[in-house]
Length: 139
Image 1 (cartoon, rainbow, N blue to C red):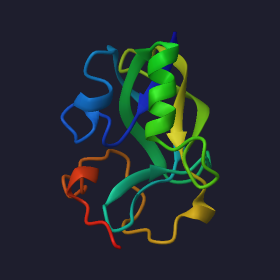
Image 2: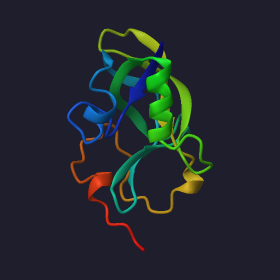
Image 3: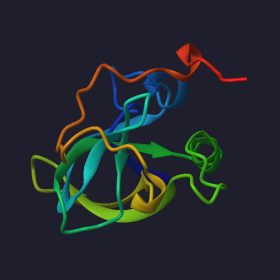
Image 4: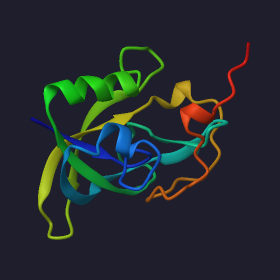
């Protein structure tokens, strides 16, 4: 089993949770032990965390336990197989009771982000995300 830290649209109550994590085991709310830059990006207002520990804020999110099949589905969803897609990065998080877990989170390299639309944030709460089903496709 794998433990995955989610900080954006995969969190409970956000656009992609039901599609991807509704049936998975919720382990709780956690915060990163190190600071990371979390920003809102692009025309769809997507949250992105950069793999740059020590910069930004402590990031709040949720941890889910997933099997290998679901992990592969998450990798596809986050475009892990593409050079400009997300990468699974190991990091440490802690709960409100100071339980520490080593988990994986999906992050993108800053060099691939051209349109940053926010300062660093610690807790993604933005409801302006444009779900993929609502995006206009240019032809």
